[in-house]
Length: 336
Image 1 (cartoon, rainbow, N blue to C red):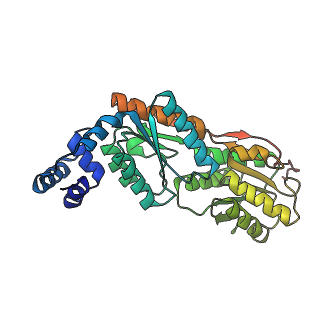
Image 2: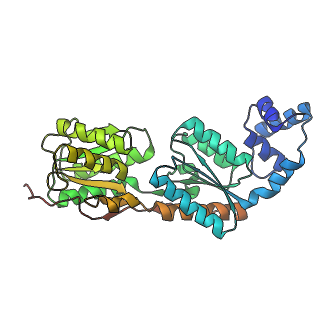
Image 3: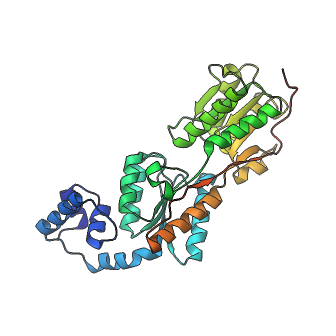
């Protein structure tokens, strides 16, 4: 007996597309629909009762594609989305993309196979065109922590560029001039925007960025440690550092301590995200608060509303990062 996967293989599409054609739940391009219908006819495919039940069940299921759940940032996303699902009496299905394009795609296909029409999607590695195609098939799919112009009314994001600019501006106001940037080595939108924010603020203050003062590492504690060892060699005279996220800042601080330096007496540090860890480091970390919990809650509600109503008013769902001043920045005498 032919399966939905057999139909998908013959038509050269995903099982998600076959499901959309069969259930008539969203738009499918006419050429694609014709290929799927021809494959169904040639294979004599018939849905079984489980498939029908899945279609009926789908509206009560919320899907979440996120990153590494061991990371406190992504755990907070999952917690916030789960709270919405519970409040709305929905079943939540969670998959991890692991910052890998193929795994993210497989995760989306799995959520669709589980009957998820409403979805919160935290995808960093799939390209814009691929996500736009999925969005065309999934009218209740909402992007989290990313924006794509063509589907901006279904994108929920934080202004990373402005947030990074604020963090550097704060250090400059405290008298710092030699400011390094430790950032991610992944080619993702967050990294690009935060790096541009750093450059914008330095340029606005007429401060040059010497070669080697932007250090690219894995955005993890170990990446921060590696950057800390490189920092003192690449950035002579550095007095302050902005980091891509809080876990990199934690690794950096540990590395500086091992090298006999004090934060903030010798070097000031500013993180980004304001995860729970930030307020319990010693000293407590000054950082940019990323409202990812509020964004995740907002995205989940938007996805469920889209699933119910099928339409969203054109709107920019943009959030702002705010500075949380704690103990890792020390003012120094201003020069000039």
